[in-house]
Image (cartoon, rainbow, N blue to C red; front, side, top):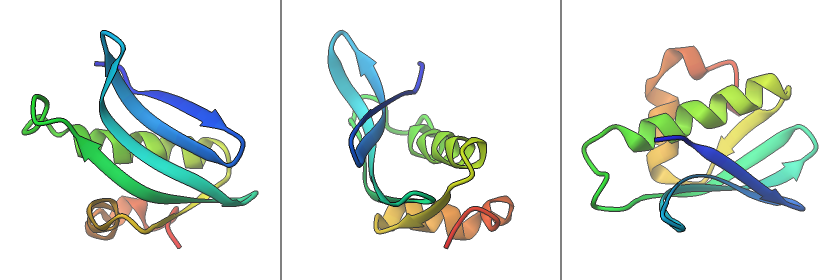
Length: 93
């Protein structure tokens, strides 16, 4: 499954799509030119138990690093993953 990114203006999302339906999504807002704020993560029950949520977080971290961005999370799940993964400390605020 491939994680894609969609962005329109200040709003964006990392997502997994299958047959035109988003089965997993992590949405964000560009709060400043150098900060994205993740506000929601959702994984369809058909994909649960496959580590998809963590893969979405990893994709956001990779995107942020590649674009010199920092991540702030208002999503409890994403905040937990970021806080519990020491290698992400450089990217979070």
